[in-house]
Amino acid sequence: MPAPPRLDDRDLAILAILQREGRIANQRLAERIHLSPSACLERVKRLERAGVIAGYGAEVALEKLLRCSTVYVEVTLKSHEAQDFERFEAAVRATPEVVECHAIGGGSDYLMQVVALDIAHYQALIDRLLAAEIGIGRYFTYVVTKPIKRAGPLPLEHLLAEEERRG
Image (cartoon, rainbow, N blue to C red; front, side, top):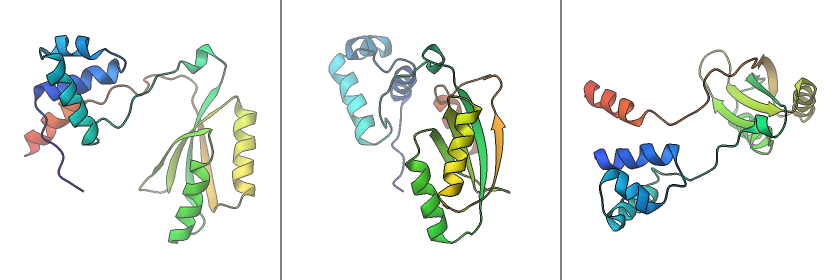
């Protein structure tokens, strides 16, 4: 993995603003960080080329469109050969309702976040995944009853300061 790019205070300010306001005009962004528009745009392009800015998107308030349920699922595979992980991961990537999936350490192999219309829709999805024989040995379901804090801007400045403190 290549060394991460060195970021100065203005780069961090750009990233913080873009995480909250991805559609901000370059002119306004430049004003907020006290740079010329061309210098600001060059910094943004450099961050994009370096892969630090991986993309832009809209945060959709799904609850304004329809009622749905969020479910977290711990999954343990039956077998732990390379092809077992590949088969499971390919199936998960092809399942739109699985909005996040992470390989984890500990007693389970994966933690998935699933968004479904309701619990019946979620159970039908699990039944399809089990019938597809993608290697699921056990799964544990955790239904979200009330979201407390949603994914938000990454704590870049805090994490970078902590990394520097640790030296």
